[in-house]
Length: 450
Image (cartoon, rainbow, N blue to C red; front, side, top):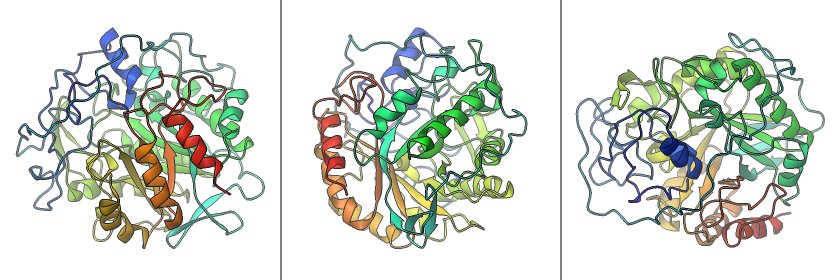
């Protein structure tokens, strides 16, 4: 969530058509803020609809957006207009390293699931490495209340569409041990690419197959579990129709996302230590569309959104009872609609809310957390799947963690990648050396946990 390649906070740069060096540079700094589609320009900071008038209704003009708005992503009925309240964001650093083509490739000899259907995953991990929802709490295999604390490991969402392998940096046992070495880390969130998993629209490329991509993710999850870590798998990059998934869309697409989740759920349904986060950051739609789907118009034309209910159903139809995380509107910074009537039905009663908070989000202060999060927390677990800030300090995350801990709210920081210290980057190397300020602050907080 560190948009240092933007000029204006909350307003995305014009996208580069196709996969170009410029797109890779944008990806490197903040891969899940790459704008999906081509020729898309920024429209407004007021992009998220909170009214319920109709599916994909025009955004409410008094609701500010989260960062990285997929510019040009509008409802079929309205186009947002520019807001004068933008704040200038830090300019890109010219010395920021580019994505390296030396990322380790997937081992082609690793047994892989059938890319058309997926296969059942490994048996449940031994002991108490399992997570379930019990009321408004998360509990482990022994039934004890737990909170998830950890990091995001970005890479599998973007490397595979740029012909650079699967992971950005090491994914071996030593790299996982480094994450586990930070006291308090018990969870790693892994962003995925829809096309690379399904093997569609020319992805993955660079000599990696869909079967190898799937096998690499399975192996990585097993490696996390071997170090006592829970895994969160989340759909980060997707695209409708024959468009390649080279950025974040406004919502999952009806063309491929249900199939993606059916396959992922089939693969990991025997693994109670893995959570499914259905879509990274919904935006530019309203709660009715969020739940039920609708038609939207963006740089990819007009296409059908897969509502969250359809994705929950796709997961449960496989027999999977894993915990499911649901991100709300405004780039998951608004989870008020996780209360009825918009909360999807779940036959397994294993839903958790996914909240994202950065210093540049609208809901970034105690008053908003009290008003918006506490009613949800009274009914279901909240996992702040991404927390961070673009100023390289730990001011916001320290405030949020101090507020969240006594309320049983979980949190994971963005990001465990070596993109250069100074923003929402936790480490300077993959042995786990924390970046000054932000990374050191998060590590210091974790050290205070039991």
